[in-house]
Amino acid sequence: MKADFKLLIGGVLVEGASTFDVINPATEQVVAKCPKADPAQLEDAIGAAKAAFPSWSALGYDARGALIEKMADAIVANKDELARLLTAEQGKPLDQAAYEVMGASFVLRAFAGMRAPEKVVREDAGNRVIEHRTPLGVVASITPWNFPLILLANKLGPCLVSGNCMVAKPAPTTPLTTLLLAELTREILPAGVFNVVCDENELGPLLSAHPDVAKVAFTGSTATGKKVMASAATGVKRVTLELGGNDAAIVLDDMVPAVAAQKVYQGAMTNAGQICVAIKRAYVHESIYDEFCEEIARLAEAAVVDDGTKQGTTIGPVQNRMQYDKVKSLIESARDGGTFLAGGELPDGPGFFIPPTIVAGLDDDAPLVREEQFGPVLPVLKFSEVDDVVRRANASEYGLAGTVWGRDLERAMDVARRIDSGTVWVNQHLAIDPTLPFRGSKQSGLGAELGQAGLHEYTQAHIINAVELEEL
Ligand code: NAD
View (cartoon, rainbow, N blue to C red):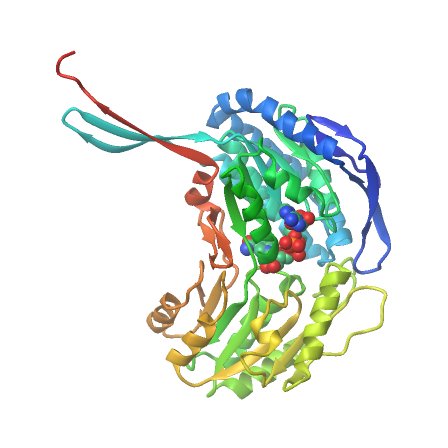
């Protein structure tokens, strides 16, 4: 596996000012040394993006879209290497890593074909009003460690196609796939259009407060999102915040319990539960609760929890020590009042492995129900009245997504309309599509990512309001 990684600044691969170790969460061994940028290198990267902006923005959508297509081709051509590296640094099973790699290329292709054309707002006798959109300038991308490639692609596609330049800063525990992507696509883009710097959590505040950064596209925790918003306030910068969630699944009484259990299990445990929109609380109608619990516990017990490089592994480790400790302490807290239907016992190391854990019998104010666990642990709760379960699902500072499961589609959709989340899926989960806007309500985010609305967030709208003067 590749061992030497470089920063990308102004089209040149450069050593970092220092290095730090990237740890494989399955083995706790070093995957590679990551170059670490100092503040002067961050300045260089922002300067390079600023210098590249005039000619890149002048190039036009079609020419930029064609280069983004080539980036997608380069990802596909190197998919195996990217997937192996992703599993090594992130921990997810190899097939899921390959899916993420292909997903990143798919998102880039979708944006390569998207446009933000001029719109006629009003046209009547003598008065013409148009809205046209221009790129913003330098965009900072700050990403977390659960989906390093897809979450970067969600920003890179709309940023570049609309004529902006980017300085990307991956999470300190999963920087390598971003660096490899930058290296693989370096010769496709003009120098400075896409830059990558790495840190150990020091550069985010500098990036988001920098006067030459016009927008911060951030995905991460709500706590950090608030800091990004505060530092962006100094320059009234544009921000897109995709933050935490505590998504509820509501399983209605007409659902077949075994089918619901299978769907909810997948929705809660894929990527070891480390998905912003993972199902983090399941509310199941009392009439099917026992059967549901029995089946979901069976699925959890059947999981193969192991190193993601081993064939047959269904759940890899949690990505880093800090997250492992957090999930472990939520499991401990659930011993107070919870009944463990599956899992709960953590194997000895090495590796941050947590078997899928299903806990019944907790109150809604238990930490595992109230907080975002971001790991393979699911509380299963009982309800009897729809009004009551809607109230309980909405009783959260988060509002990212949610799911409703029921055979009567109209009824399930009525319940979905009452959930205060940016997205609610009915009888499906994780149907994220680059052409559909994705956004959080409440403290789960600000602004849209993906879709036409997401593309617009990388542009400034200008209204031009003209009349014909009769005197002329
Ligand atoms: P995090 O907030 O700790 O870190 C995210 C990024 O912010 C990292 O790159 C980090 O280096 C950087 N950062 C740290 N301090 C900063 C600061 N003061 N200013 C600017 N940047 C700073 O999040 P995490 O632990 O890496 O990721 C997990 C969280 O991300 C979960 O809450 C999850 O729900 C959320 N998430 C949300 C979405 C979404 O689309 N809504 C998607 C994936 C993950």
